Structures are given as structure tokens and as C-alpha cells.
Amino acid sequence: MKLTAQEQKEIKHDLQGLLHTKETALMKRCIQHSAISTYDHVLSVVRLSFYLNRRLHLGAPSKELVRGAFLHDFYLYDWHENGYIGRLHGLHHPAIALKNASSRYRLTPAERNIIESHMWPLTLFHIPKCRAAWIVCIADKICSAYEIIFHTKSLH
Image (cartoon, rainbow, N blue to C red):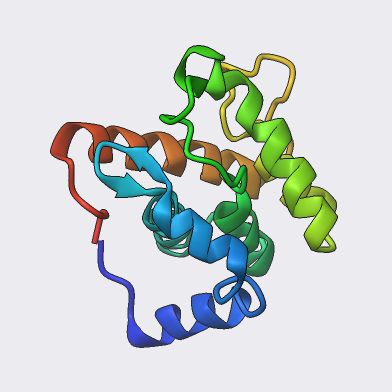
């Protein structure tokens, strides 16, 4: 997957106000899958979501897609530490991420749906309801599988 310099610039523009925060610094220290940080994971999901939307002409609003993808795992803890791994992280973290993101940022309905539904079908009653949410839900699964299987930083 290769994004153009212009596409990378668009993503950076859409992420203004999100990339250089104390929460983002924490995400860089928290492990998501294997040796991959939560920060690297969400950026992979951002890139793949953007790529799929653009290359397949899916028509999701780019800014909401990018912001929602970046915030989809905004739960702000390392789920591998302090015994959390046994507390059904996969079921609970979308609600925690949504609470954290909505307390810090003004979210659109699409961004809220992206965050709360990205673990569907595991979170059975939180279904993706817009194109952007479906794209992020699928991209998250692809990136997660890639990270777990290949133990690498991203799907560049």
C-alpha cells in the first residue's frame, strides 16, 4: 500500500490537533499487538482506511474517516499490564475510547460510530452505520491480523 505525498499531507491535515498531545505520547508507550504500539496501530488503520476509501472510490468523508480511525483505540492504557488482559478488553475498550475521545474532542456522529463499532461483530449491538465506520472496522481487522502474524510496525 503506497500513499502519495499529497495523500499523506491530507491525512496530516485531518489529524491536526490530535497528533501532538500528552494522550498521543501515552499511546506511543502502550502496546497494542505483539511489539506494536497503540499509536503505530492507529496510524496503520488511518492509512489503510484512507487508502481503501480513496482507491476503491467508497465515498466516505475523508476527515471523519481519518479522525475516527485515529481515535478508534483512544482508551489510553496498556491492556497487557495490571491484569487487564483477563477483563475482556476487546468488549470494553470501544466504549472507553469513545468516552475518552468525546471528553477531549468534538466528535461528529460518524466519528462516534467509527469508535464504538470498530470491534463489530464482537460488540454485537454496536454496528457500523456509515461507510466510514465499515471501512475502519475492516481496516482495523486487517491491520490487527497483519501486526499479530508478522510482528511488524505497519502495512506500508
